[in-house]
Length: 287
Image (cartoon, rainbow, N blue to C red):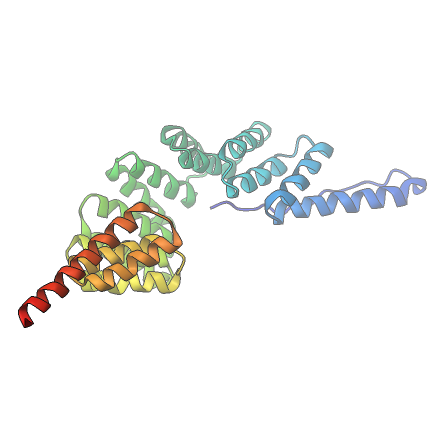
């Protein structure tokens, strides 16, 4: 996760004659610094840019602007700003971590891992970098390396729900569903409102063909995050596997309404077709 740094400029009044003008300038610069650090979107980018115009050597302003670019999904500009921050401050752990995260978002996992390596070299206690490197290893299919990094995350921060969730994902990808479910249980115990952990645990239950448990977890994930189309879709799949085709069709439609995905349309068609076949069967039996 990105950490927004809180910092302030110090202005020196050069003479009493310039005091008012300098005071206004200082106030404007201080306000820009605050917006650059605390705000989001184009307003923050503009403020950071003004800060950098006044102080081109501000690693923090480059870093904070990079954070905003990343939140906007502009990973190239984010990487550019994190790189400038690193040039100005080669020991900037969070900049390496966040640049690695941006590389991961672009699917360039080797570059991401190189940045996480450097962040960890600079700060061996940096749990976020272990977490992110673990995710990058998992994305490369190197699940044992991922699990080793996520073990370290949990050792450094035993209350870090995200670490348990991510280790559960790596274990699940290895087919170790019982261990994965145990990790998701811990994540949920630490954060009972962790929708993603319920979703992931539901996937593990479904892989074990425990459809009732999967339904309960997908339903809770939807309660916590009603805008997540994938939870509705996968809940529909589970109902379909249980031959509850009307319920399946209902959830495929809910998924499509949130995200216009052709798979949801196809599966809803299949579910409705099965529903019609069941109806015809019942009519034939009672004829």
